[in-house]
Length: 264
Image (cartoon, rainbow, N blue to C red; front, side, top):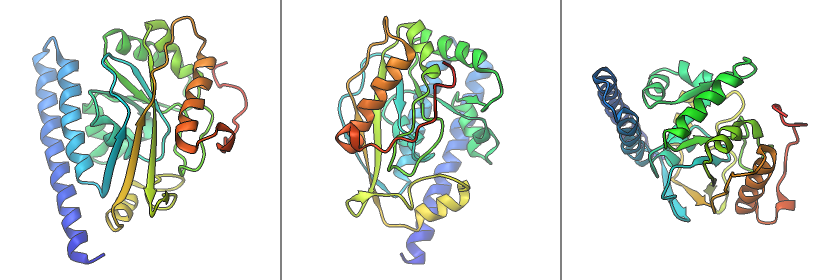
């Protein structure tokens, strides 16, 4: 790729980040005004901005399936931080993210202003998190979580943690399974798109912006009702549906077993 094209992409992304700061500032104003529909305004502003951020990334996007017509708990496999803008541009959503994201320069502040809920691994605050998720869903606001708890290179699907689905059962909120796949040269992109291991945000961004345009395929699967179901059954059902959408026959999915459910 020529340096002119790379610098053009960087300039566009920086302009989009600047726009994000303006949007976040607007959210701060909304918070201070204590508007009754603050959460809805936040989600809609976030969706509008994430659509612009997605457009600044070197992806073409293909969406299959139908958007849900009611609030749901979205659950997706997880490959990269880019999953968030690419899925967040589709509908008004809030997000659950690892606590480390909150410390990222600029991006962490933007995530906080977007209403992201942050989770610390092994912090023992799962009860508090569950209450936050339940309150969010009871207010008829859609939420996106990544039940694998980490990213992969796209060639496998790790065990889904059922404890994150308890709030949906209590709220009577259906699940919206989503399969997201990054494709380059008609193959799963395992080198450039994934944000895994010791990757840092800046290095990953430079890797993305220096690459050719890749394809992102997003498949919105059939919703799963939660009434009367157990969280572990739901986790396995969603895992099976997403795995089939990604890899075909479920037997072909390379699953990294993690033992029993952490919250079982």
